[in-house]
Amino acid sequence: MSSLLRVVPLVLSMVMKFRATKRSMVEAAEDANGPCTFYLVYGNNLVIMTITLFFALTMPIITPLAFLFFGLKYCVERYLVATYDEKDE
Image (cartoon, rainbow, N blue to C red):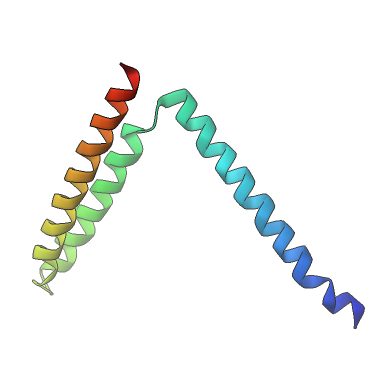
C-alpha cells in the first residue's frame, strides 16, 4: 500500500523535471536565435494552411475561421516584432 502512495510524488517530480528541461531548452534557443525562430513559425504556418486547405473542400466553414486565425496571428506577430525591436534600441 505504501508503494502506491509514492506514485503521485514520483509522477509529479518527473513532470516538473520535464517542464524544467523543456523551459531551459526554449530559453537556450531564444538566446541563440532571438525570440522568433523563423523556420519554426514558417513550418507551423504551412502545416496549418495545408490542413485548412485540405478540410476546406469538405467543410467550407473552416475557410473564414482560417482567415480569422491568420489575420490575428499576423497582428500578434507584428506586435511581437515591434516590441522586440524596441528592446534592441
